Image 1 (cartoon, one colour):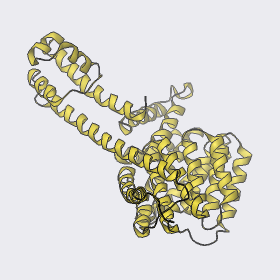
Image 2 (cartoon, one colour):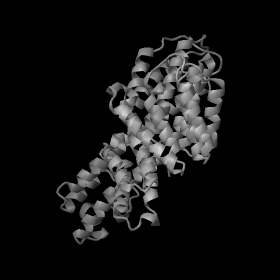
Image 3 (cartoon, helix red, strand yellow):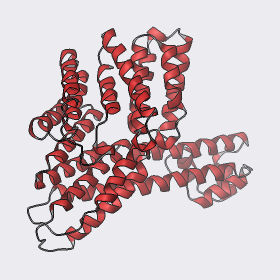
Length: 417
């Protein structure tokens, strides 16, 4: 069952549990309720089993019959609103994926158009402090104009370089948005489309960025060997202008850390720092397409937490705290709010591994206060890891660890509902 199916099942479960609770509290059998609202008993049984979300008329009749004073109907409306919202998002993801498949398969025939560079730069910067769903919608809508123009010509004329660069950058934004929404397969397709566009026009900067993003998505899926292949090819073939080299080297460090290569991780992080000191020129775009000092420290922390040596864990905590400090003292347009939140999780991870549970609870407090739309898939995934570390015999008699674990697991349920 995929993420959407799980979410839909959870929505049905909330309504079905309330319906069953109300029916039983009134001392009514399924037959009694069926006779009262004139619905088939097997239909009601399926609703109570969470197999389907009923139509509105059922909720209205059942609410009146069970004297729920609007409580059951309100629960149905909330579930229906969420279902519609998820359906809209699912359609946006599907459309974006289909368009990326089209871009990735472009042949050598192209067409003229005008790029929308200013809007794309605005999206790239806005992404740092905007929830992913609206970013996906805006980037998808803008890129759709490009796709429609391409598809409207039977034999396209040569396409301007700027046009394909625009399409590639929009595909990159879509890759991040899809990944933050937990749709990693879609994200990988968008990143592949971005790379294809870059490769077609010889834009090494975008190609390096795309390979780094493909590596990031592979790490999300736990395929660290594939991630390593992506970032190493990106560094070897395309790294050059701007911050592409330190970003790819940090991606190598993360991959090696997950593979248990402590020495390789340290070496890659040292190379990344040396590479930052040798950066030539500015990135063509800022925001999502740049790699700041805070981001590099965040990457260092998220690499080192996978290692077990105390010195590496202390360094991980230090790097995460420095990244948070830099971001919190930066103007809002320069703050990457999702990464800033994740830095808190990585800092807490290091502290738990160092047996500093009270410190971890303090560091995680801002994460528990995040609104649901800011609880991206990465946060849910990494919080789950912290909860798993606390859910062991080692902490079974530690009140602070038990409280933190329970709060994390409750957060997981709320954050992924």
